[in-house]
Length: 208
Image 1 (cartoon, rainbow, N blue to C red):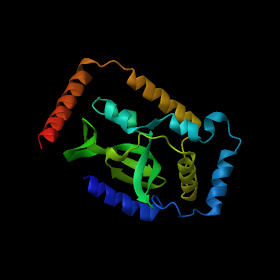
Image 2: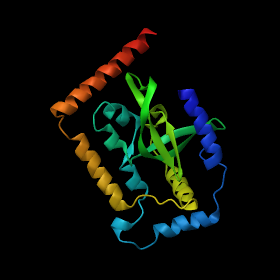
Image 3: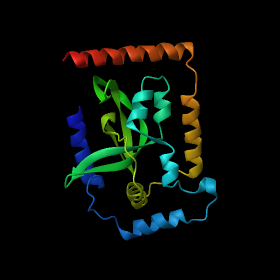
Image 4: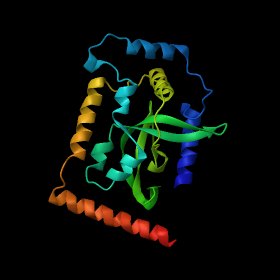
């Protein structure tokens, strides 16, 4: 599955400029992006900035930790991840991608990180393009301002709006509420069931 994901990433990079660091986006798009940042809108309506997006960014470790819980799908929707899309001149290339949704179950689980497995991917959006990817290429490393700037310029070029500051605050509040929610009886059964499934995946992986 990882190989197939890598192939899809490469194809998408060719069509949307995900991979190449040399590809230049037109000056008009850059100007539109800068104008949007200085639109003079009220704070709640203003476009989210780098620090705002980082407040609702998920790392691979966070995803692995919360994957078994019943509210995982609700938790990850409209968050952002730093995703490895390829390499160029021996340098890894990452893009900031929005999590649109959780993908359908896969026929075979895969490892997110050590002792953490998953049986679905995520539908990730970059501008106006959406593709489904495994979660094992989500980065734990810090995002760079240049990655956010590239996202902003590309979104402006395809006329896709980034979230507002108010939308980010609402999402951050929801994430905090979900992670502090006690497990009730029904979600607890779901949680235990998923943990048992993942434990079986770990044991099978170690046996091979």
